[in-house]
Length: 101
Image 1 (tube, helix red, strand yellow):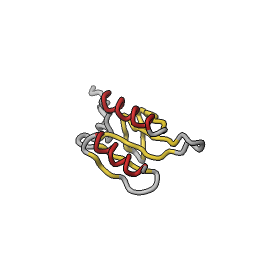
Image 2 (cartoon, helix red, strand yellow):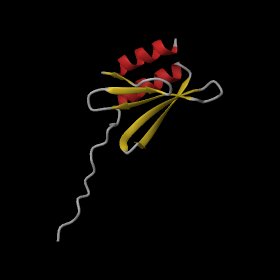
Image 3 (cartoon, helix red, strand yellow):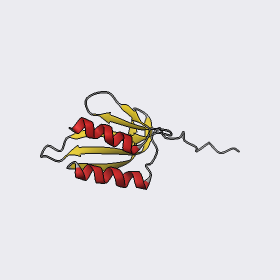
Image 4 (cartoon, one colour):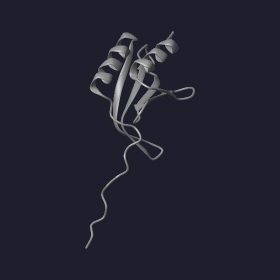
């Protein structure tokens, strides 16, 4: 008797490195934003180990961006507009800073 396969496909989004999480958290605090780590996130049938959500803290608490890590890049998805890729967290933060200005 054979057992059914319990393997699942690899998630689309991977967990962030601790150093990247610390950098992103510090940046969010400096920008008066709140960063939330959402674990085991599912969107339209795709699994993400970790998704970062960035919220505005001036009253409304609106979600501004979502970010996840793929195998070779980072994806930033604004709540309005198109998603874009960055090769590293500092590159993503530079672009986000330009958008905040």
